Amino acid sequence: MRHVDSFEIQPPTPPSHNGVPRSAWARARRRVSRWHRPYTAALLLLDFAAVVLADWIAQEAFGQARAGFYNAQADPTWFYTVVFLLVPLGWLAALWGNRAYDRRYLGLGPEEYKRVIRGGVAVTATVSFVAFATKTDLSRYTVGFALAGALVLVLLFRITARFVLHRIRGRAGHAGHRMVLVGTLPECLEVYVAVTRNPAAGLVPVAIHITDGYAAARGIQTPVPVYAGRDVLALVREVGGDTIAVCGSASAEPGELRRLAWQLEGSGVDLVVAPQLTDIAGPRVHIRPIEGLPLLHVEEPTLSGPALLAKNLMDRIAAGLGLLLLVPVFLAIGLAIRLSDPGPVFFRQPRVGHEGRTFRVWKFRTMYVNAEERLAGLVDQNETDGMLFKMRQDPRVFPVGRFLRASSLDELPQLINVLWGEMSLVGPRPLPADDGDFLGDVRRRLLVRPGMTGLWQVSGRSDLSWDEAVRLDLYYVDNWSLAYDLSILWRTVGVVLARKGAY
Image (cartoon, rainbow, N blue to C red; front, side, top):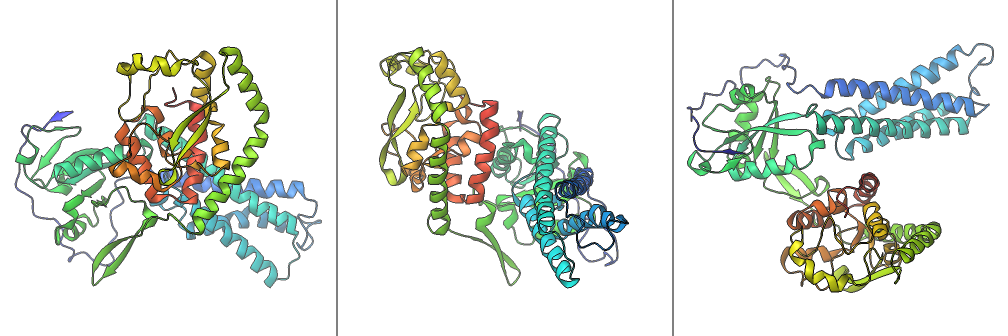
């Protein structure tokens, strides 16, 4: 951390560009940030290989693969050209047309995968239309298998590529954007905390340029150097940045943001705006320009309707199937608990659920039977803040219980709560009923059912502070969707296997 005690305030340099003299035919300088170029090239090769592999599997699996191709048995050249060259190239064209290679969607979020699926639908429609128009009698099973297999393989290859990209960003700090934050110091620090919370996003702040003067920053600790009164573009080049992030109120100054965008034309430096509207997911925000004024329209959270009905249906079906399939696992865990410490197999505790209703949560018992009596003597060793008591080496947990906690197997009986409609597969974590009355912002968590997993689990679980856990829960309540639930469930698998934050 750095103390902002003194730095040189230089007079601002006149902007080098005012948006007028540039020729309409002039070619902009290549972007300073270049990580996406080799990554996009790798995706092109992977997508091509995925389609070729899917077509080859389909050809080997079905004997009628060459049906509809003239003289394919005697001379299969045209068949191979179509299957292993033209169709893969058509896939690449469809993916490109649906902007599945757009750098803004690569490396983070579900938008990349949505565009891949749209590309797959476009390829399917095109193949169907061409076969109908040319009256080509293709093998439906072969074509269907090849198209579905190609889509699955493309998605799997892209998930693998993203995993490698995240590992590179997390370990080496490469393949990202070096950002200069512009705005008041508190706003810039808030954006700094937000973008560095997830290293996989690849956003690396390297400097702060404050707009409220030196006095406002004196004596404050900052994680990156702070500057004032500098030409922003010159500062970006000096610190080796490639992106300018305009934070909070700085984006609202009349004409300033527009002039900054003019100044950056042809420089290769990206410009992003971080408004004061925080913890609102993209699907809820829509830009509606009125007379040149871009208005951010924020939709209400979806807390009812068909999507919620589908979520409840998915919860009940998944919980019912899960309980049936896990009966042998439940029996084995129950036997291990009884052998470790005589007493009940299950632990039930009152928790606060949807709209403040209290229910009793089901869990496998992981502590000795006298755990509640021993809690009073351990309160001063609590390692977390907020409503929950947590210890990494809690003496009340027996060895088998420690394994169940680390692997999250102790939470499997909560499928009973999901089946009864008291919980959901994904949602805010259920808190004990005797730990407070949920006043203020915390009470908003009760608008949805608590979940077996959620943002708190895939973001660190017990390693999170109370304030951070509450923020994640509230973010989920305001921005949940079925696609978001599926994403969290997928991320939960990796977190559980890695045993992150579980004790």
